[in-house]
Structures are given as C-alpha cells and as structure tokens.
Length: 132
Image 1 (cartoon, one colour):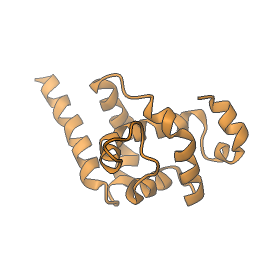
Image 2 (image 1 turned 90 degrees about the vertical axis):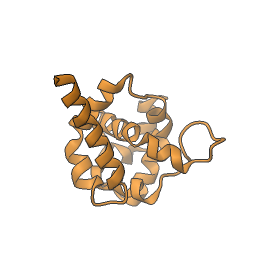
Image 3 (image 1 turned 30 degrees about the vertical axis):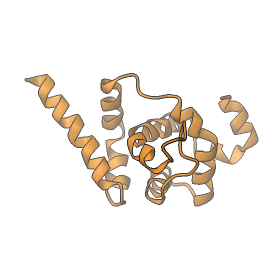
C-alpha cells in the first residue's frame, strides 16, 4: 500500500493522520484485532469490511475525527493495519503501554471496556511474572 498515494487521493485524511498518528491507528487496530475477528464471517480472510459501532466510536474519539473520516480511515487503512501485526507479545505489551491513556479514556466508556480491561490486565500480569 502506498500511503502517500492514499493521502494524495484523500487529502482530508492529512487533517487527522500524521505518520505518527497513523502508527497509533495501526497499533490500536492490532490491539483490537481479536475483537474484530469475532465480527467478521469465519470464511472471510483479512479484516472485516466495516467496524462494529463500539470500535468505530472508540477510534473516532481517539483521533477526534468525524463519522465520515472514521469510515474513510477504515476503508483506506484497514488492509495496512491488518497486514502489519505485532511481531511478538512484547511488542503488543509495549503498544498497550504507549496507548494506555487512549484505551482508558476512550475505550472504557464504550462497549469495548471488557476487552480493554482484559488487555491491560494481561500486560500487568505478564509484567509481574517477568519481575518474579
């Protein structure tokens, strides 16, 4: 995927996504991947065609973007995000730590709170076990 071509085609995405924010978007999609896997048909490879309302609202709030921009971001970046998984558990844990504020502030008030709590608990548990 050519990110520059996407920004050329949809310059309005530049108002929301710097390259750093795009990396955050990719991280959040990967953190939510198990939840997203549950909403797509089992025979479908790759990401779901659309997001659940709760995940869509979480991402909108996380990036302070409109409904239209949230849908456009998923349309344009879903394959990039899906094809850029975490390399290992430590990379995933680092992403949880990096984005803890977004997860807490925008994830917990939405219907994905149980999943967010699970992610945070798993990271804390793994950290404690490594310290023993």
